[in-house]
Image 1 (cartoon, helix red, strand yellow):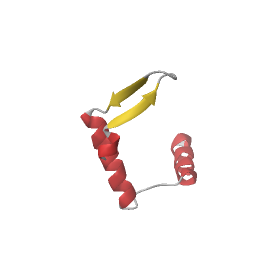
Image 2: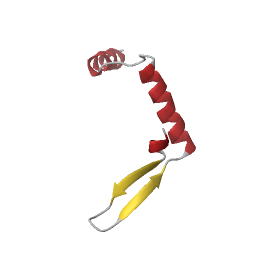
Image 3: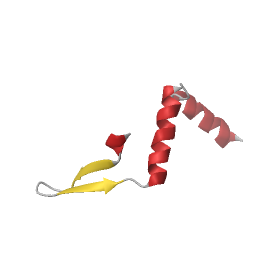
Length: 57
């Protein structure tokens, strides 16, 4: 997660800018990593099916 604190963004060939994550963004990333670690994921196919079911109701 420490690698996520700063994100290197290349604006053009001569300048570099750093993006500093807000605390809520870091919290969301940590929660996502925890979900992946514990197998709480959904495939795109399953998500599409759930979306279609939701939209049809």
